[in-house]
Picture (cartoon, rainbow over the protein chains, first blue to last red):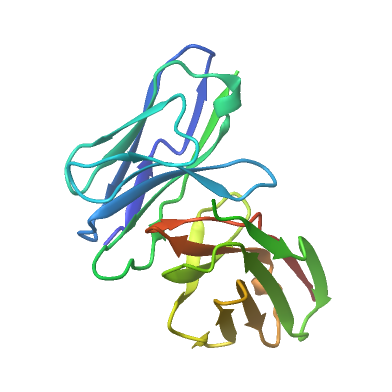
Length: 114
Length: 110
């Protein structure tokens, strides 16, 4: 039981390049989330998927797109990377029922845009 | 928009001392609140989750309290150890989404 996995762990991009961050969970959770963490700040929600087939914007969605590929996988795409997108990206998942349940986080992807 | 504040931003204590970490949030209409631990360069580990109907939650040396009406939560760590050195984040859950504070960075000196 690996929990939440993310690939890659590290990535360096040049301004204008594109890339996709991958996330998968093996806990059969309905909901998945993408956050970014910048130095000295808390995590901020980029996009989330409450259930398979749905996605919604979070607090900082500009410059990103997401795909909920199936119940297990949720990817984050940067179409044209900018230095302001240098950050650590975390994926999380949780069950969703009558009450929201605990969120479980992946190890993160450290992205540098030069 | 939920605003989360954690005080103090950093804390350094000798081993054995009890730790008190404070979290305040502006919107009291929350479902639950999670406390996380983050080690340098690592992901987040969930420590405790308190449902909105609860006042306290305990796990080993950790105890978290929640006063939803005043928008406050406190994490107590008893008899601190050097291995407790990390950043601690609180995150209230409203509208099924977490909002995070900037965290309290704890250093426990041996």
